[in-house]
Image (cartoon, rainbow, N blue to C red; front, top):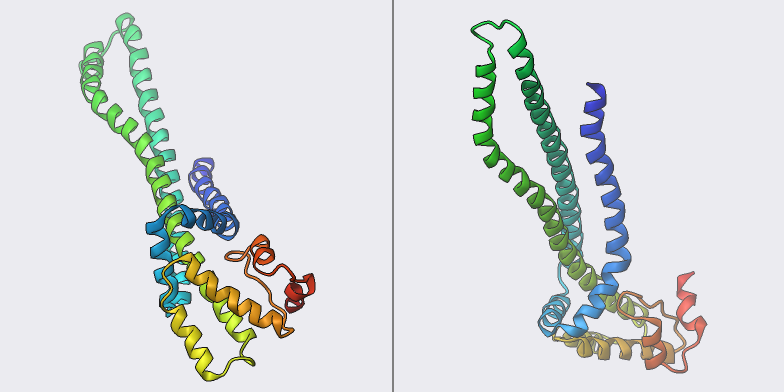
Length: 255
């Protein structure tokens, strides 16, 4: 009994822990790379992402909320699917075992004297009756066997997309805010408002890149160091936009 409880409770918990670890790796490393490439190939998705970036307000709150809800959805889905599948398989095995024991009684009953309440005919009738319902329950079992993994995969994909979008938006906005902070000593109130106004009107990757490159050049040309956000600015992008950039210019701010 204890072993059964540990099995039914422990396995789903273990799966949820493993799933959480995998999800963390996906959201921190694989998701940003996937989003960066997908934005380049999907115009509709790109417009949606950069419209969210330009909104700027409440992005941090939205990102943390989406991430939390998505993580909870994945954990709950894993727990529910694992628990349902394990119990469904367990009850099916018990059902098939009970049928097998009943069938095993039939030849014995032909050799032994039986009571009126428990006869070979009664067993046969019970088995025949169960066969009629077996077809239905087998279909339900097969459907659940397909539906549960499908539900799990679907919930993960939905969560993956939500986190991918929210994280990219958050990192893009954070990098702009970071560059504005680095250049704060160089920007007067008018220039600062101008950059923020332009940022609120971006609609694609090129608009965002133009502003970011300007702020990076402004900082570097005045001897300031920057720490690029690798989610939105890869090393190759920096070298392409700033050929004369030095290693110290992009690492000193990390200290």
